[in-house]
Length: 68
Image (cartoon, rainbow, N blue to C red; front, top):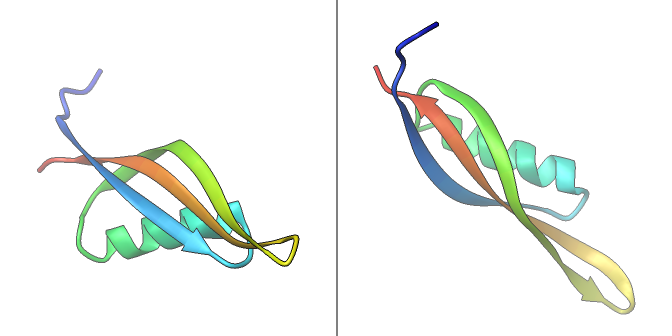
């Protein structure tokens, strides 16, 4: 059993392609400034509809990072 302490942040990822890509975009971008990201949890999925079709995906997610 470890005694790690974690911080928690919330971000919104977006993508014109998919929910999966929106999540990956959020984690990659956050990883550029936050070290030790170890998990994420999706909170909300929403999107934009244009001309009767899905045009954009947005995913709100929380991610946990280990504090050194």
